[in-house]
Length: 346
Image 1 (cartoon, rainbow, N blue to C red):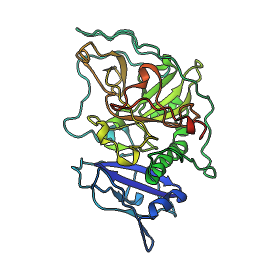
Image 2 (cartoon, helix red, strand yellow):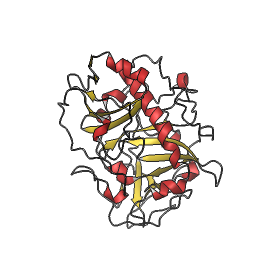
Image 3 (cartoon, rainbow, N blue to C red):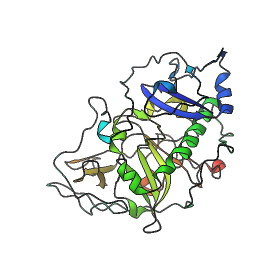
Image 4 (spheres, rainbow, N blue to C red):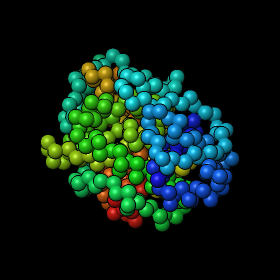
């Protein structure tokens, strides 16, 4: 196994622990001595830049088998990058200037994990209503530990390049390896994650808004959101990570390695969120109005591309979205993907 980090479109993409068999696909681009050279097309003629995981002191552990991966520098307009610290939530770098800032003016009581958001958000012009309850999907409630002797195989999907398949497999493997430490919601809470008040839907999201606002993406050690199966009251079961791009991102900002039929992203362009008395928490406040706007004091905090990665079997594959209002919106011209071919891959 080797660790790889890729700078794509100005983001630092963590693709640690890429299986050696996958790296051989990358290595077909050329090997010079002990240095493997990786060149990945990013947006036509824009190559992807990569750097050794050893250069990061906070998010990725190096190993004796780490390999330096080099490629040409990104020629896109590059956003400023920050290294995600591992000490305190307060130490996380904010998004670039111009990104949405914390809510002002409307504060509602904090919501405990497993609880529901308030039925109505107070405010002079608030029209928020209780969140609808989407039809729950069926998932097992047993987390399967990652077995490095049984690598994830996502082959067989038309239109997916070897490099894209390797990146998708690495993201699943990294998530399987790192996510179980958040199995206890109290551990997630201590790490800065807060519920958005959707436990009643059967799939509760706990979001770390500091992670959601920084420039690091697809970091399996610090995912932006955790998803718990809450269908059995009092017994939440960790079932997925949800990786989110930074505020202001669009579908065109998704790194090329993850723009494939395997990994379909979605956004939530019609869900409003309100700040609670807990500065680390925002809760679902209701849908947008007929003009697609949120009431004053609320924001479209989920209107960025995001991707679920499941650590339990899912009937629509390891990158499946949820159903109902939680499904969000996929890119124009696409239908929600249900990858039945890889439904039993975990």
